[in-house]
Image 1 (cartoon, one colour):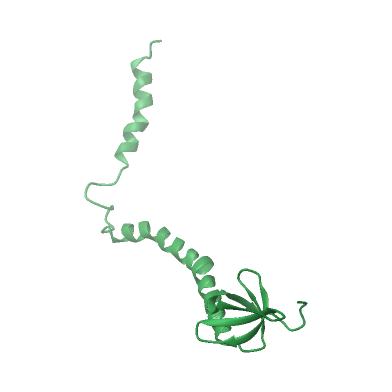
Image 2 (image 1 turned 90 degrees about the horizontal axis):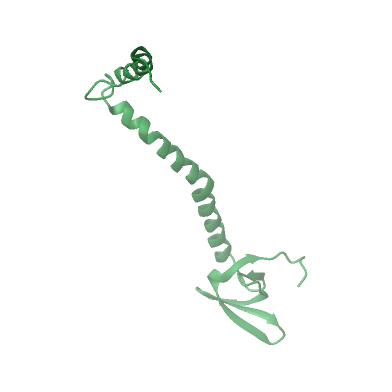
Length: 124
């Protein structure tokens, strides 16, 4: 097909106008460039804040609660380990806990493997 010259010019005219609307050479159109740099980093800051509020902060809070719970374990507490073993605390040292899991059966666990203290009303 043959396209006339006037039709080709009418089609190319918006393209030349679009190029003419670009930023002037050497920067951000009179803003000095610092505003553009801040605006380009703003989404990264917002994403970091969202990650902190939704992931990091709750995880730190849960870890602190677990540490506090481990410090309050005493003889006679009913606990559950991270592997799901229910037991009664027989003795507590700095890094280990000895649990009674059945008659005449005592097992020594690392203190960090205690996942929670059970209420006394729960079934064994």
